[in-house]
Length: 294
Ligand SMILES: [Fe+2]
Ligand SMILES: [Fe+2]
Image (cartoon, rainbow, N blue to C red; front, side, top):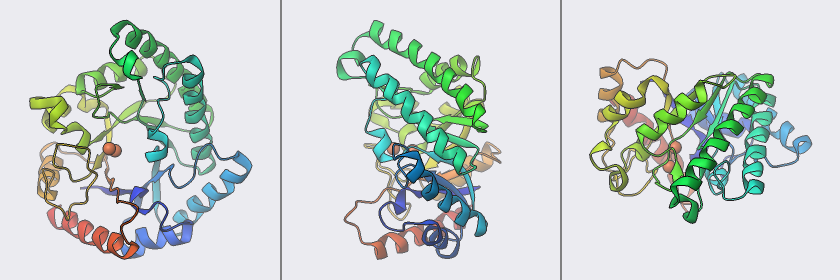
């Protein structure tokens, strides 16, 4: 398994390039990461934001760590972005992603991504509003892809989410979006499929099945988020906990589908009140379990 680390586990704890590189490389023994926008906020003024972002990138490079992509985290996910209810909110969503692309470019990272967007409750229940906002969002994203190409990015990612009020959630939604986007975008757009989202049983029922996702939209899956879950909520637990996504299941899937490049990014989110000592020990234990299963 090609194992990588989304840096969500570390937010507010280990700040700065050297501290983070030490945790990733020396403590956890990993050398591929996905940099979360929860460490550097794309909305910070560029002249203050970019030196901080570049410092992470430089320290990681010195330590031999590859940043495969940057990705929206908890803060970014709070907002509706491209599927918001008003033109003003949707325009701010576009600006958000463009600013994240600017930051990614400053870090000399070649890919960035986030979920696509969230409808308001009222819009989610109105098929014609959903469709109109969706179509506009696709056009906006195509425009963003041209901007990303100008900034030197090579891939954009969209992460499906386990809510019917957002888009895409199901594998068929994800396939539709990939086809609509890739017919027009300046650079390829791929899916970042999160195991804990795809296996969310209350929404997907029998289609909460990774083989079904592979069959439906596998050709567009660029990488995965992995996390432990009970399938009842989007838990983002670590693999030290019992649940439905065991390291053995991940390894079996990896081998059977002959995956090679589609990094498994651990996306573990701890309660803020959990101690730093526990988080580090738990991350180490989990990496060991994944390595053992691989
Ligand atoms: Fe995720
Ligand atoms: Fe999630």
